Length: 120
Image (cartoon, rainbow, N blue to C red):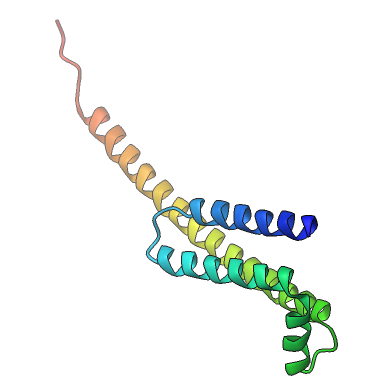
């Protein structure tokens, strides 16, 4: 029972950090809802492991632990794809910003070279 309470506390803490670390995105509400569903499912799996085995048997998987492993592998793959896509978007933004800065610097240096200093 102590271990179950510790697991539930860890799941809730991780979910809180995951939701708080998401800056104001358009899909923030959806991500929070998914986090809450994950917390509920994790707590149910911790409190009622036989329920997880029943769900696994329903889907034709031998044990609940096997089902968790398969779901974890799929979640890891989804996370990897989402991370790669986010990095690609970030790289594209950095490229656009670098081009904009280069254009601004080019215009500034052209303007400065065209201006001649006054003689005193």
